[in-house]
Amino acid sequence: MNELEAQQLAEKILALDDRVIVAGVVDQKGDVIGGKLNESQKSSFSNDIKDWEETGSRAAVIMGTVRASDKLLSDIESIVFIRKDSKQLLTWIPEKQITVAAIFPKSIDGWILSQKIRHMFGLE
Image 1 (spheres, rainbow, N blue to C red):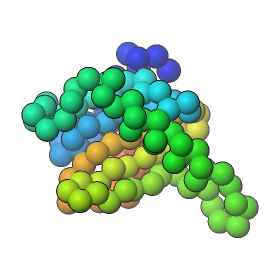
Image 2 (image 1 turned 180 degrees about the vertical axis):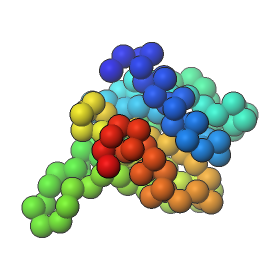
Image 3 (image 1 turned 90 degrees about the vertical axis):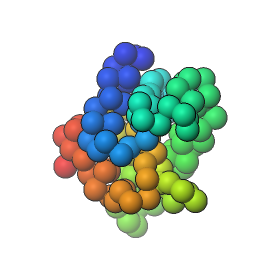
């Protein structure tokens, strides 16, 4: 996936719910391929993808670790982190070999957002 495709994907994720603060795409190595910041959040978050690199690397490590099948339970599709004032969602997209990340207010149901993202890729 190239940067333009990742940018367009991030825009589609933001369009799923106008309360999503930021959306990004991370490859398996932890490199942020692209992302988009909700225009209403520009004062709260950096719009520079370089500033997202550390978070992207952590997201790839976390998703790679939990994706390892334990053969007892079903595979992990998404992870929701509860932060002090927000939530962060990581969703693995196997066909593209990417992790899609979104940060959103605690009032949004992470499972529902995950299902919407997975539906975008025909994973339901």
